[in-house]
Amino acid sequence: MDEVKQLIEDIQKKKLKPIYFLMGEEPYYIDRISEFIDQNVLSDDEKGFNQMVIYGRDASIDEIVSNAKRFPMMAEYQVVIVKEAQDLSRTIEQLADYAKNPQPSTILVLNYKYKTIDKRKTLYKTLQKTGVVFESKKLYENQVADWIRRV
Image 1 (cartoon, rainbow, N blue to C red):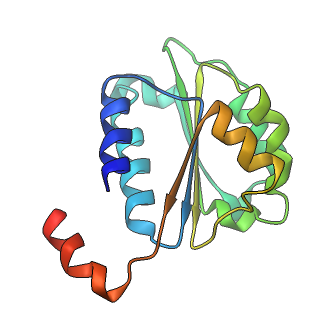
Image 2 (tube, rainbow, N blue to C red; image 1 turned 180 degrees about the vertical axis):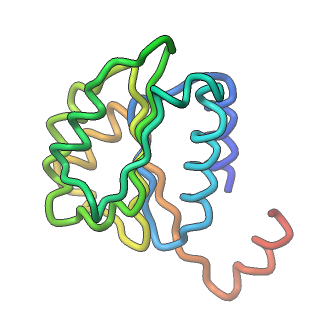
């Protein structure tokens, strides 16, 4: 929960990273962070040309990388949000090449729900260096009451 607050504060202060890999079994925080980026990084005028929402089931890693490598038009940043990125789990490791040298003017947000990536693989290690990897862990029964009080 503190990690979520810190992420949101950093985004508000425009301390942005080129990649946000949001993963885990609990989708609430993944959706919350993704929506916050969606609503706060670009103004309404900038969103028309510089914000794109892609669904993992309808796209390939190559298409996502191609969109992420574009430059923003009349804005400081371009935002590419990949919803349902878990549908790309077979090919997600191919994202490692882009993650090594991401486009600094692009904010790529990957919503990888209900799963996590292997922390021993290249992609995870590269994402930790160049972006943000957020893991939303499943809540257990004994944690629910405390979580409700905090939210």
